[in-house]
Length: 74
Image (cartoon, rainbow, N blue to C red; front, side, top):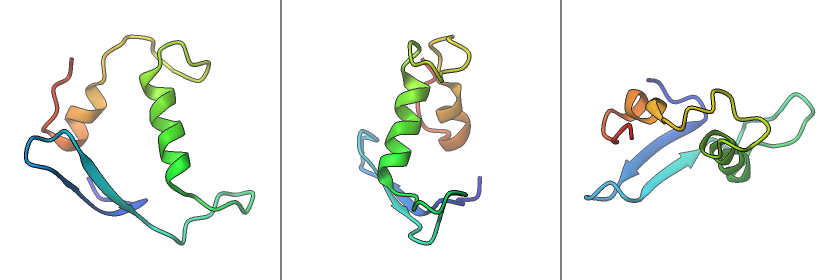
């Protein structure tokens, strides 16, 4: 995985807190600037199976394990 929107990330020792450093030069097609609120909204959509934009509705989050290789899939 190569970061495109984050320039760096790290976790605490027990992997319960992750810190991401986001690029500050990313703009959406409408000219609005990308920021941490966009990241939070994206994860909320993925985690909430009742969210209207959630796809799959399986309740499993295999992406995290595939992306970071450290988190439990269940």
